[in-house]
Length: 383
Image (spheres, rainbow, N blue to C red):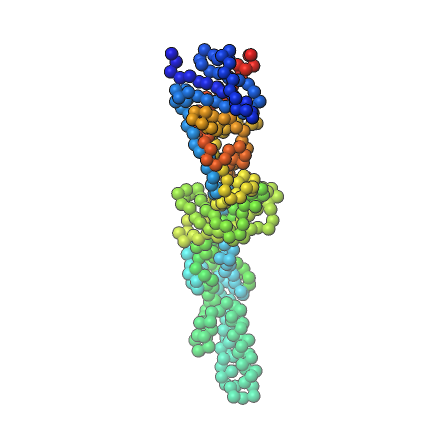
């Protein structure tokens, strides 16, 4: 005597009746009928255990999706500055080279400049003349000349401290000192000692890397999922175990016509200086409450993707309607992964139609149920 018996029951639509015609019973004790109703499979306890069937309840939840896109580390343009010459001259000394760390006001180069020498002399003469003519009819004119010579030194880049020293009778400096505008790194150097330079020549580029920009390339079809102020997580290949948090600060106005992507700029703190401009990055946006093609918001019903059974283009699941009895039911599902994301599909899918929250679906052993229905259909056709 066999340890397990399998009984197949097909419920007729609208009446729930059962046909127990013995002529349709096989030697294995299975029974099958064909009708236009929804197929139902009923297993004995032994057959149920042998099939290894496991069920899990569909659940209502507010999903949190992840939109994952490629990105690249870039300088924050507000934290980059050029050190340039404001007058023609010759570089007498370079105090830094590319890669050096600098502090705000630190000397980076010294320039021999005839205009600077003349400016210092003119300023000191104007100081003495203004003091000599104080209280006379020419006092106002002397003060105007003093202001003009002071202004000329300011335009040359002379610091207020150096101007005050000259005003108090200090000796003119031999060289014009160029200083770093803020704390940062020398990321480019364009000069050599002894080289002649014209006014406006760029000597260095200084960047503050304590904060960097990450430009995420968001596909056109995923643009509705990204907004200003949205949080993002940045991961780079060099440090896969580290995550850098930031927020979308601005969105580019123009779409890249080749890649069909739009740049989303994320401001990221970089105190450890692990993020270097030019690095490739993976950017992940947390998106709560959207499903598939930017559709249903809020609470949705989800099931494990292992419960899905495909038959051509159709998808269905086996819903447990009573102990060891399952109804095959067509479903419409959607992915929890947003369109355009590089994230792999998750282990659960959204059910748009076919299963309600709390209903139990077969997540293992569905192949056995499908096979029994197929055998039932074959037996029906033979009769």
